[in-house]
Image (cartoon, chains in turn cyan, blue):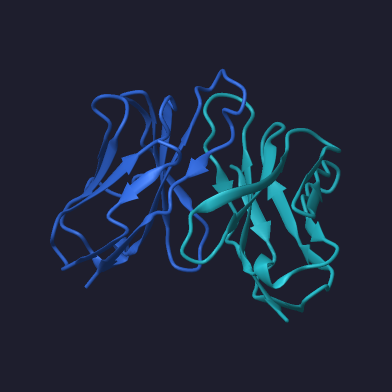
Length: 113
Length: 117
């Protein structure tokens, strides 16, 4: 079956530090990959996505590259801000039929001034 | 509407009570999903509707859980005889039809947090 594994948090960084949150997946076929973000008290929001191998998704300074050979989709940002503090979820969906997302457990990011 | 709306945002129930959670999806989104998010965990799939048809209910944890979408728009997730292990945030999401562009991008509501005492 499909599964997503992401690094445990919390990840604690100072403002302007470099961020990496690791995500690896197991899936049949060729899924699409996503990062969702959940700010305190809010719903999940799509951050970025990639639909095929070697695609790079990017948004708000975050980026992730779909690596088929390592089955990974690590999230990176060169310089984090306090406002980036949130829980980040890696997810995948099969590319046929309807879109049942499979999520990782989430990684909390805490950025201090 | 502009987004996915869920109500109530917070619900406290005594063990054994029945609860109903409402989801109002984005207008025109025929696909609707319910997810359960336990504390500290990622969301887990419960059920999927395409219009009024419930095409997948494989994630419903027991027969105490029931979902409906009678007119293909608003959906209700009902939990009968609630148990403490039902405490979680229940998320609703909607998306365009499977054959349309953007179909694999789900828009989530803020969720309904259920606490069973």
